[in-house]
Length: 109
Figure (cartoon, rainbow, N blue to C red):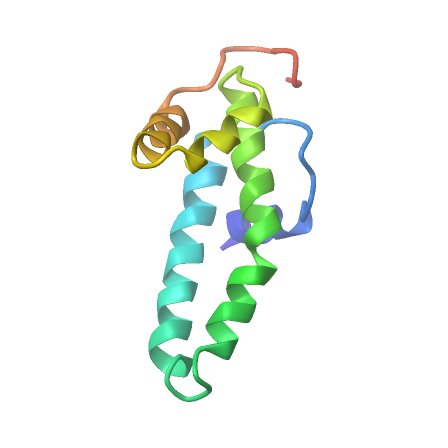
């Protein structure tokens, strides 16, 4: 849960690096919270609460993805590859599972 909260504290921090653990723990908790909200509150209020949650975590999700790209030595603009149908998501997934650059890179220690 601490990883999730750390990402939320860096709400729109696009600079720096995010380790694999930080990225994947945020993704896991985000998926769990989304599913719980969708199943528990999705039908009660017509999906308003899950939609508001998704909007609330949109910027932190993009920010942690860009910081993760920085950690692998890539510029944050690679995030835009998700708009390429099918292949874009696969390429981004590969980038997210790659190991970090050892030591410092141009984005920090």
